[in-house]
Amino acid sequence: MGKFVLLDARLFAPGADLSGASNKIELTSEIEDKDTTNYRSGGWKEVIGGLGSAEISGEGQWEAGDPSKVDDASWSTLGGRGPYTVCPTDSVVGALAYLVYGLRTDYKVGDAVGEVAPWAGTVKSSWPLVRGQIAHPPGTARTATGTGTVLNLGAVPAGKRLYAGLHILSAAGTTPSLTVSIESDDGAGFASPVTRATFDAAAGPGGQIARTDGLAITDTHWRVAWAVTGTGPSFMFAVSLGIR
Image 1 (cartoon, rainbow, N blue to C red):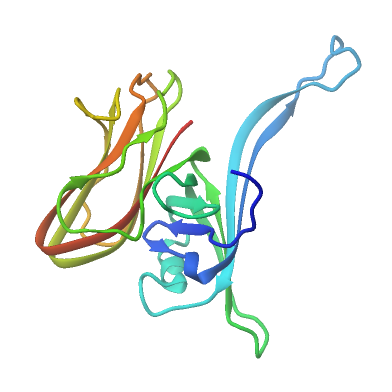
Image 2 (cartoon, rainbow, N blue to C red):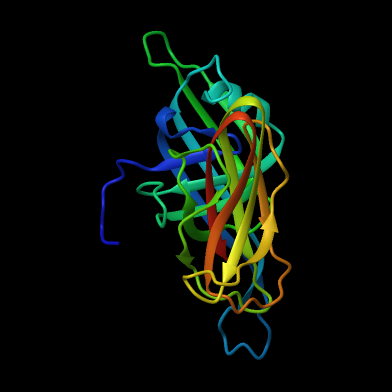
């Protein structure tokens, strides 16, 4: 990916797509530096890495009146933790994505008379910030059980994990139920898929996050699988995956 202008960045809160109400998204990550300078440091300051942290800050145009709107979504998550996914360019399968499990720490609304009503808010990380890809796009409705596009994310080394963020954006039908899982295989054909993580069954909008146990996984290919039940069910959801 070369240089580009920010025109279609995407922001997914736990159960809402806030992209259409956002005009500024900033993502920061840092590692705390701890001083270890001593008499054998050769006259130079020495530091080692301490605690890591990440933060997402967003701004945009205020809207309310539906769980998918920024005001409703912000109030329902304020003070709570959930998955957040940021995409710099788009949210098609394979698009670059940053995901984190974070705490919604603040929410600000209002401005001077005559201004477009704004909002601003911040999310601070509770898990590591992960760089990955979109594994399931937000704009495709699922009405029956199936599997998604295969991604070659690579193997998971020992001590690292596969992280997955699920954003259920809408649900319709009578007693609809959606169960999403993450599968891996050693080849793109998925001749012998292995389930690596399964999210809780859901009947409506919301967000979940999952990660593997830190053991090595030699499989290199990954995909999303979903089971849909109910009468006339239909779900819109997005999934982001990454290894860290």
